[in-house]
Length: 115
Length: 110
Image (cartoon, rainbow over all chains, first blue to last red; front, top):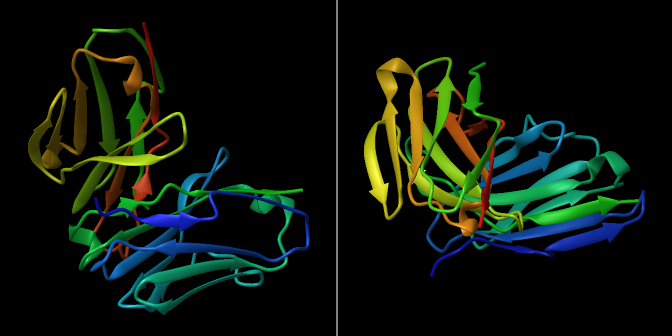
């Protein structure tokens, strides 16, 4: 049963600390997305990769957030330094081909709490 | 940008009842997905349905692209159907970004 996996599932940290979230897309998928879910904003896109190349990171606060794909089986999202307003659930999703015409599959999410 | 509106915002049902959830969008779309976010927070894919009708067990969905809406039907609801149902769309010029509605929160009582 092919699924997107994310680690950690829950993370509690203190303000100012670095946070790294990891995602393993479904094998064979070549698009990866990072979304963030908050009560106020709902679900919003942070970053989008296709064939490991970043295509859109306009939704990401550039000063503290960074997203990378070291290889086709791993995507990372880092926050440094973290702030209480970063508390949210971070979802990774993956898909095949042009996402305009294809389905995105979501991982279980990482629930981040910044104290 | 495109607007996605879901109705109703909340719905309470008795087990066994049927329901219809609606998703309206403000412009033509190339991609539409329905998700169920369960009480544990997981987003589960229900349908990829930019147009037409699909069925999967007790759930079915219809998208009328020309009239800019989609409907999700839940028949013989069960307590495990509880959670939030999201509609999300992509328009060709959005670069692959899913735009989500605010969701319909469904509670099925035993």
